[in-house]
Image 1 (spheres, rainbow, N blue to C red):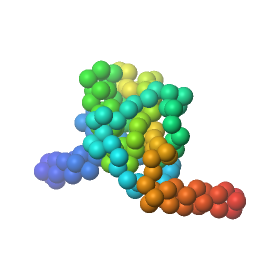
Image 2 (cartoon, helix red, strand yellow):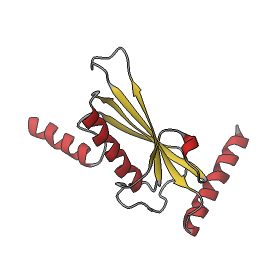
Image 3 (cartoon, rainbow, N blue to C red):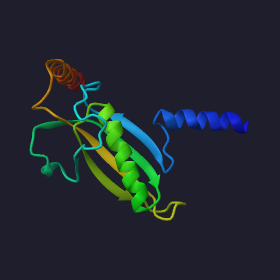
Image 4 (cartoon, rainbow, N blue to C red):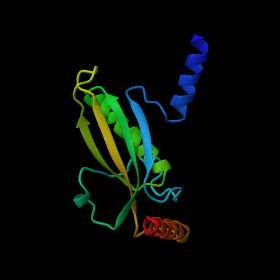
Length: 145
């Protein structure tokens, strides 16, 4: 039984569903499967506020890592992991916010919430079509409501 649980955890960790420090989730809120432009994400810019971004952009999704211990090294490691995952999804930058949760079994659990930023001034022709199709689908969905 322990071997099965170990194998399941290893598979989930390798797929990016589990973090050694906290639980990971992703919510798509924009067009997906756009062209990667920042490689592995190590040099991906990280912003704290939207106002810091001086180029036209749109949000691709929201990634969260919950229940992190309140330790600088862990938060830095998870930020690097968020950057790598965001790069795989085609993001050019991140807007990261940190929240400290109350009333939890963990002393001071931290949640990192990151918006995946896609710059709109350097899109490939293929990505422009995906963005336009996503925008058209949103208009149709909103009109149906």
